[in-house]
Length: 391
Image (cartoon, rainbow, N blue to C red; front, side, top):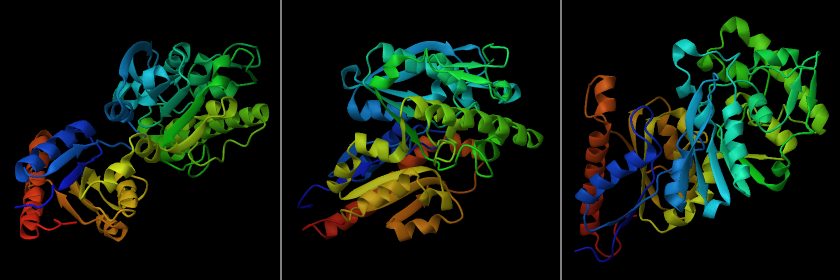
């Protein structure tokens, strides 16, 4: 007999290319409940500010999702979704929903032409609906335009020497001569804008947006210098107009510099995506009430200790001595560095040699199976130590 209920918190990130965080959490919860039916289980999917963050917050806090037809990264219309929380007072907008890499097939990717205009249209819609706070997440962008398109959608005018409005994309920034903010949406000054990002790169230079993230968006080696110059030119003009130092801000290189005009004109602030989600969902409180946190992500390696969901959970769990067990699609080099941060154990969900396609297709069942076995271990320990159960 177990003297008191054993409480587990299920809080995974997404398993990239196979499962969203809510789907992974559901599979973990099913396996755990089957393996340890006497326990109680709370499900709280997590995100680090990338794709899926809006849905995570909607699940955690309640809210409604709205679909809007906006301009996609390459100009064609797309259906984009954003979330309203707190009776419409807070809007959560993912840049990836309107300007994401998934909306630009590999053969069509053109970072010189790709624009964040559609994300600006979503921001404008949220302002029109009276949102007092906007959370913008920057993961998964197809763009490298410094947020120029986003700003144009909100009324900022970018003109060349002839006084013509610039075309969409990073290439046109080479011809930027003047910036006119007189028609910028005045509602921007009345809202709080928080920009969630999980990188610290500046706008330009060796560690900037173009050199580090440009290649995945289609920037060729011979194009890096030109695009970096264009971004620097735009950033320098906005610094002069706003009177603020912008280009060197940590995180400004996220999503091809998309936050640049919002920080310049709307006084938006950049924040760790995980910290934002954790605070909004009251994750630390949920961890303190649990005996164990079961988390996971697609791949765990050295990078997992640097601002990812697992490292954030370990930091919060250290305040309450709650155990943390992680499941992963694969365990990469440096994964053992997580033990120094307080990880109790980590398990791969792969049962043996199989093709990647097969593992991705079977991921829900593999996660459920591994969670079942972890739960059986904790149940056995709880039965052996009924006074307090395992910690």
